[in-house]
Amino acid sequence: MGAIKSLPVHQLSKINGESVLRTTTRKMRKLAVAVVVCGITGLSAASAHADNGTVGTNIASIAAANLHNDGCETNSAGGASYYNSCNEEWCADFAKWVWAQAGVDVDGLTNGAGSFAEYNGGLSSTPEVGDAVVFGYEGDGKAEHVAIVTSVDTATGEITSIGGNQGTSSTGAVTQDGPYDDAVGSQSSWMDYMTLSGYATPIGGTTTAPPAPAPVTPHGAVWDRAMTSAGVWAAHAGEIDDNGAITDIAAAALPNDTMHVETVVPGSGVWDRTRNADGTWTSSQQIDTTGSITEVAAAGLPDGTLHVVTLVDGTVWDRTMTSAGTWAAHATEIDTSGSITDIAAAALPDGTLHVDTLVDGTVWDRTLSSTGTWAAHATEIDTSGSITAVAAAALPNGTLHVDTLVNGTVWDRTLSSAGTWAAHATDIDNTGSVANLSAATLPNGTLQIDTVAGGVWERTLSSAGTWDAHATEIDTNGSIFGTYSAGLPDGSFHVGSNVS
Image (cartoon, rainbow, N blue to C red; front, top):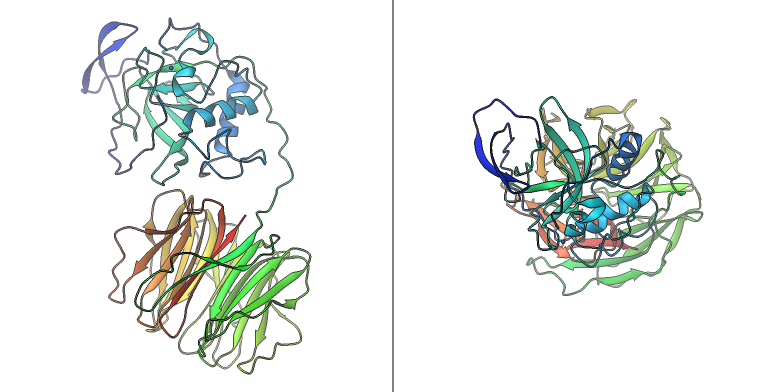
């Protein structure tokens, strides 16, 4: 059992059938989070507990490599999900999968959390890194939850853990929990309605993780769903590009009520498809043959010019189409830094174009003036260092919004119409499970943020500056990995999905 603490929060707990009055420093951070719980197997005599050593460190590293994944995402080994995690409550699937990846003997473990309580002679009261921590074991072959211990602080008697099927999304996610009291009978910081039952010790295992496979870039077709100017969503999305090799998408609306959708096909470059004002779609047109393009962004200026911005080996290029529909013969290199990993673009009502770039977790903003002159340098507007994706949108009142993704949460920073950046970004989505995002505005002054989190969710900022209390799920397809947003002058709104 955990070390006796000295702070005055007392509980009567039962450990191995004995009633024990203990004092704990349990951190009861009552987070307003609904935790998805696994299926409910038992409490045998506690096994002798060995130090897991470097095996445990390896187990913890593998668990951490999958943080923020949902049950249907590609895992850190390059495979699909975690056993059957896309189709069932999956905390045990995740813990078993992590142990198996570390070479642990998982014979006897099932998709039930309680199977860990019957593993290797039963539960121990002393945690080690790499153990499975079991909650809510009832002694009848059932338990409520299981996760992987990733750190142990013997000085404070606290642990942290990483578990699957946690969080607030409909499918759950791999998230970190803690630090919380390690003592049998306590609760974790998130799951304060579950009792910690003990720890299962892995059998065997290796000290080094298996080599990671070559990364597989998600790819798939493109679907588009529209919302009318009256706020009614189409019943279904329509497939607008069946090319299964597309890896990135963007869209922009022009003043003539046309919408351009840009798609990246590795080895082939960028293709442009147009939605006409009457709702019909044209065939795709190849507008850039550079095979090494990895990301694309787009923005339409008030004068009808379209800018398609691309990322090539860490540098940024801009190609334009005039209001008459003529493409520039060549793209122009606008950022030579070589370390950019994501891009976004937005056009202000005054004709200024903003291109936002992600470099080593920070965001930089470069402008093209209404007279066609690029700023000499980009300006660093977010120094957080942990940003993984960026989106941008401009409001009719001249305000620019730059939205960023940090550890599965979404933050929004604004540039006023007077050209002043807000001192801080605002956390507008703290679910922790967002994997991608896009943004666009409507003529009525509303801002729409669309996020990928086991489907597509949308949150709105009203023209009065008020955020919706909650995001609304507008597409439940769990295979979506990318999205675009575009608001047309007629007041309709389009959200695109890149579906693997």
